[in-house]
Length: 300
Image (cartoon, rainbow, N blue to C red; front, side, top):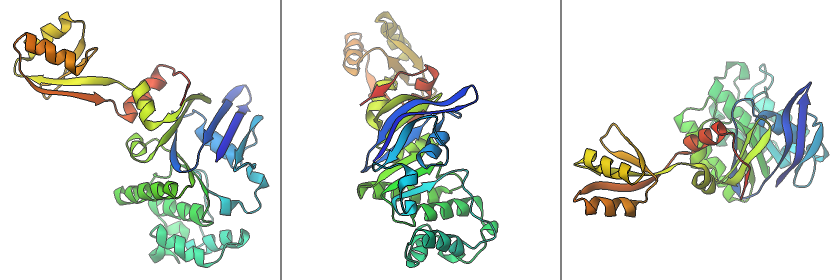
């Protein structure tokens, strides 16, 4: 478990992380969301002992990161700013990490296979593409078979196949009872992998909740209606105070009335409905709405 309590970081007169508190539980993939400059990367760096907080604490399984004797064996981390020595081969880079953390050398070959880099094991890192470099970073994060994963934008540079592979990997690791914290700006992918969400803006917590509850509480839910007489239905819906808009495919999106109410209204006016369905906004729409409104702290 990752436990962050009142974490604060200032640079001069600017507060980047402001009394931030949240918990990342085991057995789930937790998405760490926020707009650019929200303080996500700084928070992750403080978790991993790379940036000293001005106040508060971040503990992993009850310990500060610097207290861990063999950190790679307990916490697998991938940060955007991390960069291995480019003159080394992939194998040499991982062997050095393994030796410094007393990890068996056989793990090097195992993780290279896991991330799909077996064929590039003896290539110098300087020849790697962005996607290959990202896979190597993930191999380093997995090297110690850690119980906790902290990944900052792990999808960057991965192709469609790589993104699908990583999605399945993260889900399987969470299913094994591990703690998985993932920061990403790719909302569609986050909606497919995350069980839980932590959303911050301007260094402060906006929401700490399950994915489903986040969308239910902050998202837009509307009714999609299709009829052969849209103008007549439009008039009747407006009379009842509903707000609606026409969509290019000829349907209408209706806010402010339930499907049952719309159905009764249509029947009372002799209008037949070809479609009547409830829809909920995407994670991206919900996130942008919350950030745009300034947000309100939500704990579930």
